[in-house]
Image (tube, rainbow, N blue to C red):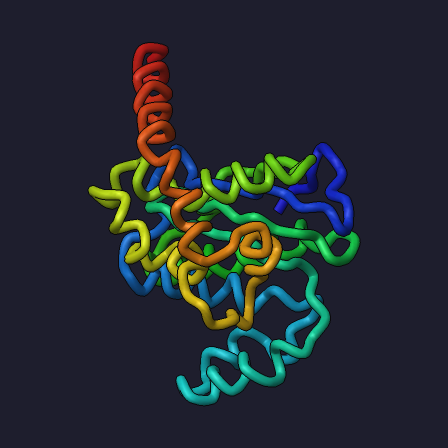
Length: 227
């Protein structure tokens, strides 16, 4: 993946996103989404202990053991705070833990997932638009707003028909934020510590759902008008 025009600073948090070339879908099946989420988790460490091709040869139980023990004890390149996968793009909220961590992480997941799709679809060439985009989170208010924006994407883009169904959208971290158990592969405490309960965090997210959906509709109308 090409280098970035702006530096990505260690210990800072970034909203990172990318989409398919020409806005084409990058996820076509349930298995595609699941593969990408598995890759997101696999490449979090600075150096995974085994190659991903070898990981794929493990049984489901062996993979679970790998993630629960060996994988979780490794130093991370990035920490994932929130994510949402959409048919033709994805959003990640990441904290960089080592110099170059985000760039290396995005290169790994992009290269791995592109190989998977190209093999599956018998195609060649890149799957995603050039450089991933990254916006630095400058304060806590922005952090909360961006996390909410990411989690509302399925509703504001009409993938789910009601706000309540956001909690059943399986390719977003919001359902995990609504659960009380600690998640082993991404950081929930940074956001949840600012709310009394998990339900308060969900309410905070849903409170702006219709507003964001209207903004998305206006944006699409503007783009159509320009075309």
